Length: 467
Image (cartoon, rainbow, N blue to C red; front, side, top):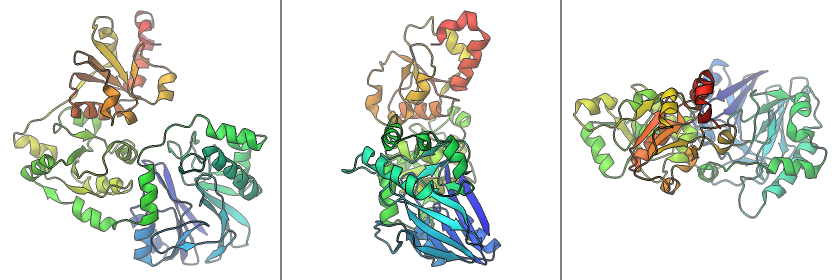
């Protein structure tokens, strides 16, 4: 028996490759299927089944491309409906992979069709359960993403029953393999580990420790942050199908010389710059939106970029394919090419550039008492802001900045100082504000982490800077 978790930090997503006796299954594959094909080749195995735990909202699955390449059927749980060929399994149905068995456990609650897959080993003993978004390490799946007439409370009741009847009766030693780890928006407070056991979760998972259905429903439905706006589109794409990743790569890997790049801009294409944050700040094409590959690129792209407009790219050399693949992974399909020669080619052509002024945390502390027009903007999430922030800072979470109305209270005379947790999100925010015509701004290098550090060093002198 061979099991490999294929974890992608940028999406906080875990796919799985299972193999026995030359037969393999893939669970919840990502859009880029090369890794699964390589694993099958290394294991001298044939991919026999592709299992999906549910219709994913936070990424576009690779199920369709993988099925076309391998001829393996796509398996969904009960109640699933798709516009492409798929097998809708019955609750309790068993699939054989070599000497292993995978049993379908319908576990509605996160979504109606949510399904877990119980793996029995060569001795027909329960070994592991692939829980999708039903059960995470330290958390359970959100019950509020389905939309429609079904309330989050009704979904939470389903989730409670699924956990109590299908998952918690399993032996304590059974390994839990979830679809997501920390940072995923599919849960409320997912733990740092990417696997656990039934026994460990009974002891430590707050949701599983509730003593009644009513208590469970209350605790899992309160304090839920707004879901990213691209989630419904990804669900629709996963249900209905999509263009091959090869087609998207063919279009997206088109080299665009400076002149053609400018023509695309003139025709309303959006420029996405994926270079490092500090490099971008030192010079970029006016109107570019920065989302660096070093951060949670796909999640921010899905939350902030328009799906209905063509995208053109500025990347470091050699990162064009990765950028396109990761954009495709959250549903973008209108990628028209990238700037040939990168930003250097734009500079060498004598084209206009823009930049972001960066300041250190101690400079912010010195400027606050003396600049009556200074406005500090904290672009972190509300919960981060509540834990501590610069005194009198305005909280405008980055996810809200795609709407120009979020900056309605900013005056032309305001001197904006932006910060986030570490300095990455604030550069994204600065690029969005500049795109909206707001240029009187500065980015605080190192963000809140550096601000706290600087203030601790100068506690008495700058104590008033912090709440």
